[in-house]
Image (cartoon, rainbow, N blue to C red; front, side, top):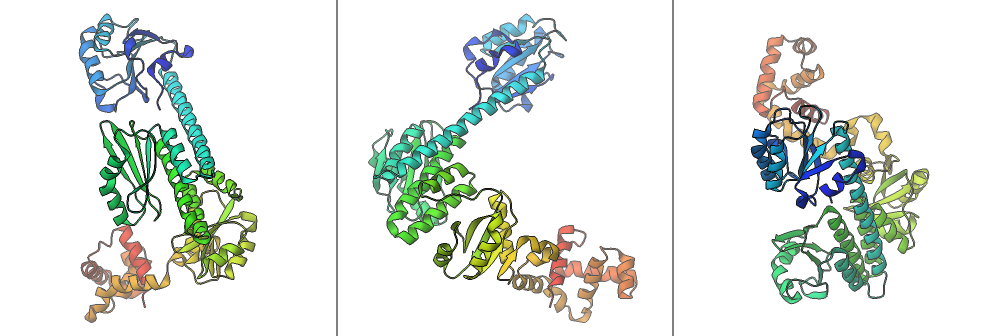
Length: 477
């Protein structure tokens, strides 16, 4: 939430003096824009405090200038005095008061940049408070999930956190539990959401639906394969609001899945915690694990990507946080224990090991790239010395090469096109060097490259095309 203009104008250090528009001081200030243009509005988005010294403005320009700012949705106008104007022209004061636009006088010794910094600091402070509030809400939701009533307690808590209503629906869209005060009966609300629930069920893949009307905003999310949660509020959901809803949805998913068997429930719990981590909700994930008697490794950590036919046996063997991730199982290991844990995991299948770090998504990507190799234990750090081609799946690369180069192989009367292309790329497109390597005249090589370009339908001057062709030639068989 952005600070109000009233809060900005009240900062003693800025020494701003309000001259007009006192009734509109609750407008949010989302940024400060400095402009000496006669019409700065093409460069505004709305809710800015516009600062000017009036270098190109006089009293006769006031009404048009103020009207344009109001139409654009500016939060207010700050007029610097002591440079172009010793005091604000009366026309601007009258125009601002008539239009209801707050007008503040900026004294000569208050730099415009000081106002910009002050607003930025206020915005940052309010953002910090919002984030703190989100973490506190996640803690309250987690404690609710541990109560005997479980998912019902989470639904009740979520309705209070967002100041709206919540519907917990089963797989068929029937109401399992409801909380809050909707604008119409819960049964009618569930019936109205039935088409959206059906679309989410048909989509299969994780997705959500957001709906908005003049008086209400609604978000619907699936809870794995166990149902759906619908959340409604009179106000639009902020980013923090979505974070709270997502945390509640993860906890509801956990609670619902716990009834599907200890082993399956455990997998769902770990997968939900991993989703929280990937979404940047580290504190919420850590609190959830702490309530379950587990914890995340300290940074730096390494990720192990494990391809195993028996994930449950692997999880039982590894003394660290593990979770399913697509077709693999990932484990978060302290960097100092990564080698030892990789050796344990190798007894159950192939393992890819990331570099130590603190970025989970990057570490997972590195571990999965290392897993592509055929080695029982492959480390991403070892791939760097083998070149980028070592990161490519050989079988997929050979199929790619065969398809891309097929028109050249089919050009039977000129089988030397592939060899000529290789020489041309190896010499970085230098005609004389490539022709000398092939022992042909450079005009002959130019002709061959034109034929290659025509047969492939590719522009050989395009660096991306050259890179693709070089990879294809490396796996050409």
